[in-house]
Length: 136
Image 1 (cartoon, rainbow, N blue to C red):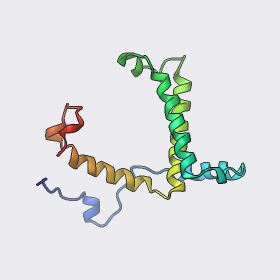
Image 2 (image 1 turned 90 degrees about the horizontal axis):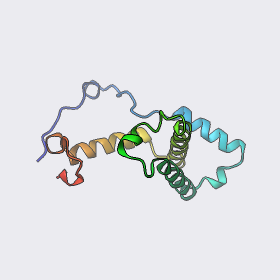
Image 3 (image 1 turned 60 degrees about the horizontal axis):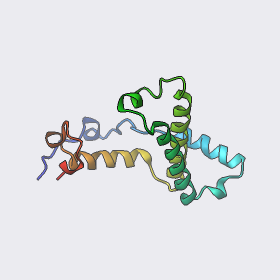
């Protein structure tokens, strides 16, 4: 059985923890951008997920065939820096839009997933080990 941990002090005191993810301003900007262009009918979850996948592919393409060391400098390299930032921004925009359309609270989703991963990959079994099989 996993050891029980005390909840953070803010939760014990009944205070809300500081958000890990706050994209409300970005969600509003993306929604306004889509609304002004009458793109909302095209922003189905299926279409947004497919667009997100395409943008992730474009980001991955920038790393293809690079060595591990070269990949670490890709955002600082003048030849690729702008493209890397643009593709990361595209991924974020589609991910945030998809979450909004599906009414997924990204902060809650991330908090829940981090808690799940903490149980699945306890520090004492996972430190320095990249194998996913370390979890219970």
